[in-house]
Length: 300
Image 1: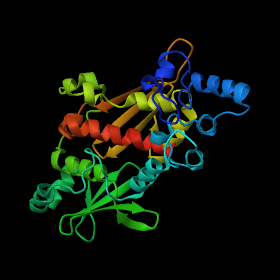
Image 2: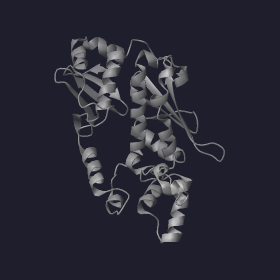
Image 3: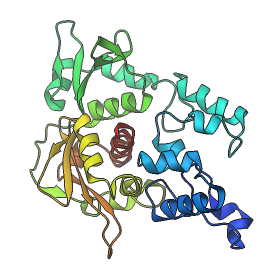
Image 4: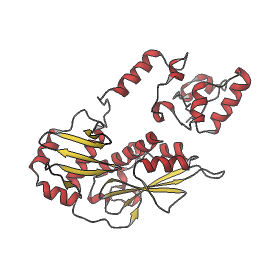
């Protein structure tokens, strides 16, 4: 899809369809390099948005850059209005998540079920621990979550101590794991999504978001390694770059990156332990993979 680094989709522009204008391409694409050269030749300078994206290896600014919308967008005069940029800033800074994947509050039934459960039994089958305050402490990627049914709180361990977990999707997946994880041990056998009993689920809108990772890291394996390290990833001898992540204690994910070459495009594959379906249902597997993928892009 000919989408520019700024986020404009050239498929919807008649200038592109008529061949009058070409797409800028993403910040990590060959098209981006060519467009910058043409802009330098014709205009005397490249677009500052595209120049920044190429320099910092940002595929798409609205999706991949934590500083969006930056001064390159605000200084205009295009591609977006100030009102639209203000909306983006407001919603990104707000604690309210306006997304069907990230509800504002956890369902009441989750808290009720957890409060009624035997805390020690939950900790035993999920490999969580119970702290001195009788709260569940659950490892999550490179940190820990502290979950307290009595106060209906999910806290994250940060450098300055325990702080409220701001991401509702993290909270939701933590509850999915606490509710569904079984006593089954890890099988020690890696499988792909097509090997799962629920393989049919991972099609259409539930295809794993590996294309996003291939776009961002296909020509930047070092960046992939740095981002993985920030999330607690452990290198494994698979593919060109591969890392093992532990979003939850019984849910290891393996993200495998094959970098682009003259014959083949970049590719990312996700592998699981064969026991994965004993600990998470299909929709939670998809959502947790999506969560880790987004964190990787953000960490880069």
